[in-house]
Image (cartoon, rainbow, N blue to C red; front, side, top):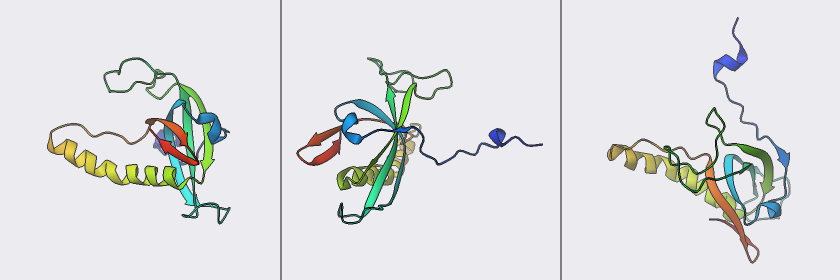
Length: 138
């Protein structure tokens, strides 16, 4: 009999207790997973979309490990830290994630041409900042 866990199927669910985006401003975080979908609250932004993010409130080392990662890892290699879930209708953040998702294949094509190994988009090491009324990834 097969065990579900042995099938290698990963859930697309975003996990973690909700956190307001304002609580993340200025903090270095990891974004592990994102979902962009139609917003339930029309008229709040130009795109009509919302971004849901699974973030890790991780700890970071001063230097990168052999994989180039700065975040502290569990023995299985996943980021160590509390997972939280956040929603935003920020068109700037939504566009930033969409652009990153679109660019990753081009980046990996360029790396392959140089004989370098591909990079994974997630987790993304970033800080969310608020400039005026706008939110940005740094």
